[in-house]
Length: 250
DNA sequence: CTTTCAGCCTGACGGC
DNA sequence: TGCCGTCAGGCTGAAA
Image (tube, rainbow, N blue to C red; front, top):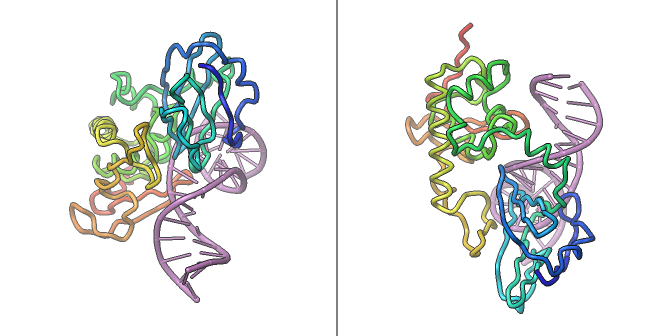
């Protein structure tokens, strides 16, 4: 990496002002853990998060700086640029404290470690809503509001169901649907908002296939009952009251 | 300990 | 046409 340039340091936490220490060192590896990217340079590592609208783009170094390109790393004829319309993302020096946080994250959802038995054990002492639990990154990472909402619908589980009162067979269905929907979304290029673009500047199409998310008051695609919405853990949760009954067994 | 919630930011959308 | 308020998302630190 030859040099870097900051156009707008106002990302989450601010962009480190001493990126110069990376000059003339190699970007050796890129890792991902949960929703974090680790850009590993020869002697230092950057921990990055794309927030909800961020993306890294590779483009000719001569290309005009886009309105939302806040940072560029120059590799000769090519640039690696950080683009983020809403600036919810972050770029920080990786350190021990941040590593500690990564260590406390739950398993990756697409690995065998995330299983029905694991989830049952993780939820054993959780009497709060299942929706909040599967969005808790200490339990499982990578499940945001859209996918949590959709997976609960597909599993027929009301989002307010007490997490520790769900049968193992239902947890197995939920785990299966979480894995399936995440893989399907990846295959289709992701969902999120209209202004999202991937590294090739393409938008995601997955949102066109969403069943209940964002469809409050519209008919359920399965039974035509109007979709309802409630707020759980500060997030809107759409669900079908017919397909996802709230069980109140003692 | 657990759980909730404001705040960060901007674009899309609805109402006037 | 444009302005204005509201909402959405992931995460953190503070409060309950």
